[in-house]
Amino acid sequence: MNRHTDTPAGTELLDLPMPEPRTCPFGPAPVYDRLRAEAPVTRVACPTGLTAWLVSRYADVRDVLGDAERFSSRPGQVVHLMAHADPERPIGEGEFTRMDGPEYQRFRRHMGPEISSPRRLAKLRPLVRAVVDERIGALAAAGPPADLYQDFAIPVTTASIGGLVGVPYADRDLFHTAASGVFSDVTDQVQLAAAVRPLQGYLFELVRRRRVEPEDDALSRMVARAPSAEPPFSDVELVAMSAVMLVAGFDSTATALAHGVLALLNDPGQWARLRDDPSLVPGTVEEMVRLFGGGAGIVREATVDTEIGGRPVAKGDYVILAIQSANHDPEAFPDPGRLDVARDTEGHLGFGHGTHQCFGQQTARLELTVALEALVRRVPSLRLAAPLADVPFKTGTSVVGPERVPVTWDEILPAEGEGP
Image (cartoon, rainbow, N blue to C red; front, side, top):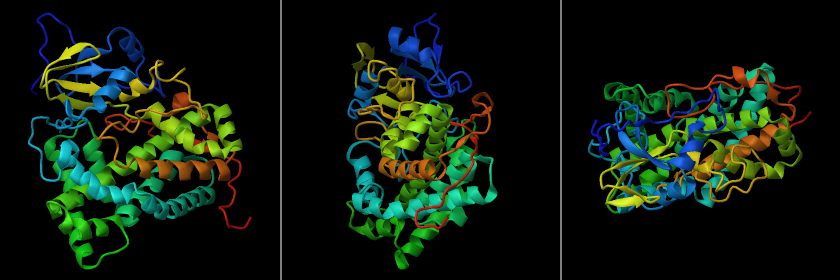
């Protein structure tokens, strides 16, 4: 792979620090504390062969995220980790996450009304609440113990994003399989194509069907508005937007939920505060995203000769933004490694910053809030069923978090409106 950052002869590159969940389950690798203090912008060698500048301080990460003119998204966000990613590959039709400026905004404006407008979010809330109540009911029927990640978080976010886009829950394996390929760090380009092709074919047929028989879902409305866009959206572009919403929208949110609840249950005092004062739930969601968001870091490419934190950076250099490290910078957040349900998280970068900040963040906030509100109200005795040291964490993926969250409880209370 092409290395844009020249390295002087005899200089030993630091290997990109990777998450260490066994030693640091709720924060970035411990080396980031030293890097922020001593080498906040430093050269690193990545698992994919890429050489880049690693940026670890909050102020510097926020500066780069907020300047899409100096720093382009063209390489792809996780090209430093994914074997199938190639920063030199031409941008494909509909591959909007690698676009900048007006090209990118064209896609964002088309999706925005479906995933972030107050009107759509208000209609989505009852759907998410129904899904959450159904899954908690399933936990009650099966009895403890349970895996909060596989038995609750994954079904909740899968049904929610599928319901929003217009993909039935029964067809979830299509985007689950695609996501496994997209976020695997060992999948090559041939394997990736095989993983996503069934979902793409399914969505092409769904686009054509919705054009003739529209329903009350995001895909139908995006199809209906497509001809009036400038320029009009093709079926390939509609499929790409729908696929990204599905693939990026279910496991990242499910992992944030499972990881956040794991941290809360590991600190019974914080769980008790939340249980006793549910008004803290929205702020707790922001704290969860601050604590864990962006664990894998994201990549940008310098478009001009510039500098970051006083360090010269040449045009064409790759830059890795260590977002989780930035959110654990004590200059930005006091005692940053501690989960605090009452923390002021204003300015956290867990959803990004600037024009490329997470386009689905309002939907994710809604899902996380509704799920957490229901858990603290209906399962107040929820607790871990195994020591934290025995909780397995995912490997081989850029979605950092627990692989299972074993939980137990004494009683599950009825949903609102249900009898005892």
